[in-house]
Amino acid sequence: MSNAAELRDLYRELILDHARAPRNFGKLDAATHDAQGINPLCGDKLHVYLQIDDERIEKLSFEGSGCAISVASASLLTDAILGLSVQAAAEYFETVTARLTQVDPPAPLKDDRLEKLLALEGVRDYPTRVKCATLAWHALNSALQNSATPATTE
Amino acid sequence: MSQPAEMREPILDCRADFPALHQEVNGHPLAYLDSAASAQQPAAVIDAVSSYQREDHANVHRGVHTLSHRATDAYEGARDKLRDFINAARRTEIVLTSGTTESINLVAQSFCRPRLREGDQVLITHLEHHSNIVPWQLVTEQTDTQLVVAPINDHGEVDVDALIDLMTDDVRMLAIGHVSNALGTINPLKRIICEAKKRDIPVLVDGAQGVPHLPIDVQALDCDFYAFSGHKMFGPTGTGVLWGRETLLDAMPPYKGGGDMILEVRFDKTVFNELPYKFEAGTPNIAGVVGLGAAVDYLTSIGMDKVHAHESAVHDYLVAQLADVEGVRLIGTAKRKASVQSFMLDDIHPHDLGTILDHQGVAIRTGHHCAMPVMERFGLPGTARASLGLYNSTDDVDRLIGALEKARQIFA
Image: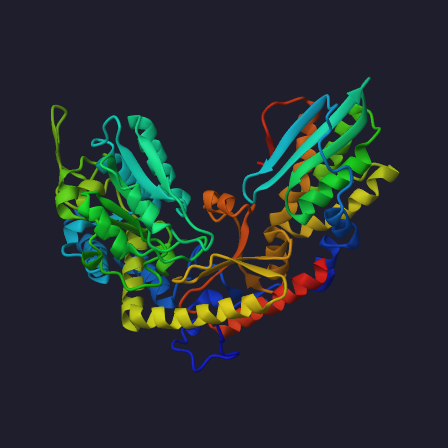
């Protein structure tokens, strides 16, 4: 793939769109679970809020500041996870982070929600930016486990 | 302020001396604008290290055989070069360390800690690098004393009047940077040190970003300690210097214990070595120091006045060109600066900017630059930072500007 194509692959329209106008942005007052994610290397800071009812994620949102990749990833996450069961959300976390980080990634889950998340996979060609993409997912995982310690990508 | 669109004939043209600069990154010739993070090494330094390792290596100081003598001569020879480079009065004042960070920790623990009493203060500024903050936090916590921070203004200059006001009777140490790594500010050390001396306040200068860009004369500066790193001044990583006044170093207990810093070891009593060896425990980074000596030779052959003149001209061009880019906001606009220009482009996160620039072969640093308090002061998560070394030219600046335009297009 040519260099120009690679960059377009990372900063494709979908990513830029979600970075400029992140979905579900803001604090969730009725949150039952929440967790912070920090990328100490670059200062990306995100807070993920979940409202879980009967093992289902009824509402979620996120706050924070970070690079376009981290914000877009968080925004895409909230779109994808809304309405899922806690169990399914945990599976998504495993699959998405594996597909972003592993040399031999697992096959994507056959799920329409995840189609948009494929847009993040351009980050695989930019090893220094992978942690930006996975930050929100680590925060989600922390929130699901109701962990008090901020998630980092270390 | 009007700046020439092009510069006159550059004062220095050293790029050819630096092997690492001659490569392509992502299909583009490398434009390296990250010397403040670490400087590239000239072939002379690389060759000195390599030939030491091939021909002269042995452990230093105690050997009787020939290679040991050669290694010792090379190592101690570098110490003498460093003494002359910063115009120190004597070689006993040149302690070889692993870098600025170790040097500052040494002073905090060995000079300050035994002296700090209840009610005492250590004074630093808001501009400091973490390595000139955390050692003082540690020592004031250990001694239950106070760390006081002098403010900076919106240009990124230390508020010198406020700093002087903070030089009270309780202050036992002033630690201040020579040149800010985040904003490029050159601190007016002459005035600051003069005021500190009037009040009998010892002064440590973090010279990590001073030494690569300015001629240094520690006797003229009249500070008490001056710390710097080899890898910022075109030498190898893992090397550095603490210059300290002999009278002070003499009175300080050792920082690290081990071989080489002793004259005699017995279980009932150990006698420490004389200066500077008292502070050099264990086998040093001999090859690195030999390389550092070669870096001093390289810089001396050019002349730091010339380095400074060249860099200043390129820096002026960098600032002018950046200011001309639509959407650029300069961070760090002190009247006197060296090497560094931090900036933001629209509301593009520096991290994204850095990736796009890297894609064009332009290397800058993005983030907090180990100066989180500075970033917080300006309300930013981090900045994009271009920093110059003596091998940079206006061509490198032009490459940066071109890449920034591309970034603007992507995020438009």
